[in-house]
Length: 161
Image (tube, rainbow, N blue to C red; front, top):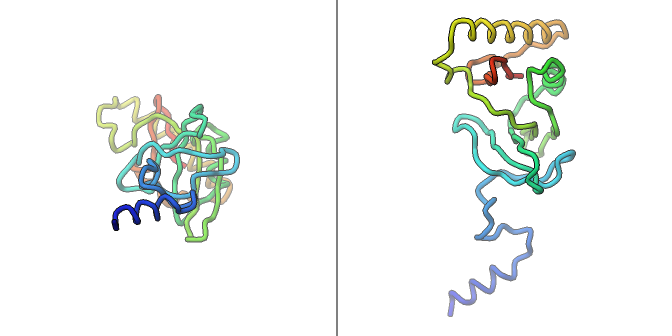
């Protein structure tokens, strides 16, 4: 039968070809990064960004995998140095023209989702943003995408670099 021939054909394919039962088949590639090893995607974080939550194959670390056309590793590391960005684990320019950026996962909400904050909370957030902007400007770096959708609010501090 034709069905049996198709089943045999698909079973004979090398393991590098995605199989029907592969739970990762609808997630991006690559699935491995330096300093992280093999990773397993768990969910897409936002519909408006190429951003996925993942975990290391061992399952002991939650991470974020982000794809973008422009990326400034130095700016990220500066912001991490003052605890305003998650730890950067891996950055790679892919052949398709996108950067693949892997960083530690941080629980939080995007600023535009924070409609229930007090005035003093917003003051703290604004001060944190000013600190980041001043630091970046002191290094001749401009954060050209400073939007409320790109600022993560966590325990009354911001992470958005």
